[in-house]
Length: 82
Image 1 (cartoon, rainbow, N blue to C red):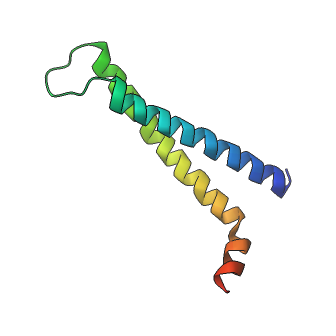
Image 2 (image 1 turned 30 degrees about the horizontal axis):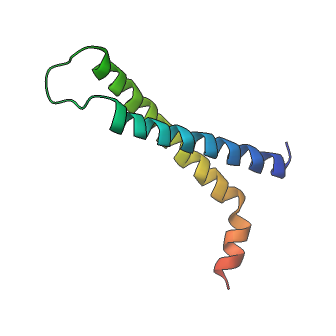
């Protein structure tokens, strides 16, 4: 795989992970019940599952951004010297 294909793959993966983060964040904030009492069935379990997906997507998104910056490091270093 050449460098440009890898850049494209990292960019697409980062976009998909960002979309998952936005979607799970909005679902968790708007659609699912907020706790405060005893577990009340499926809504609470769904909230925990969505939060778990959100947390793992955040980890993978952070890694993908680190790889993205690493692949562009020559550009970053050149422009920091200006």
